[in-house]
Length: 100
Image 1: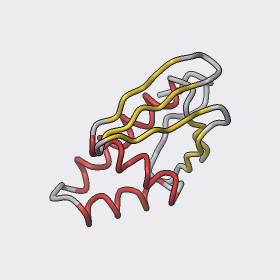
Image 2: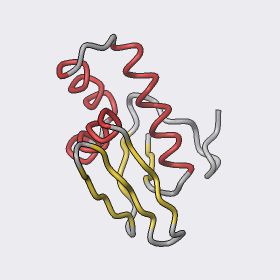
Image 3: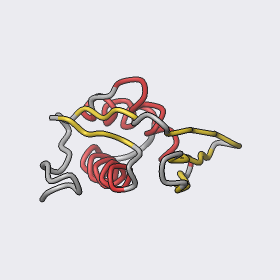
């Protein structure tokens, strides 16, 4: 599966970095991301917000999964699938860059 930029889809070995021009605002445990270049807003629920914070902290998705599994009662497989889906959405919205 290819990403919008033509590269491979993210995997747990991928690293994710926030693109320049992306603002993050948290309010009451949930977050809104704003892409200043496109003017697009992207909302995150509480778990998505925590994943975003862990992406900022770790960059490597496997480390994000380990942290989420340790913090929440969730199976690693479910967490991995949810994280990869979130990263694909973030990449599609131009909010992050994914590298192998």
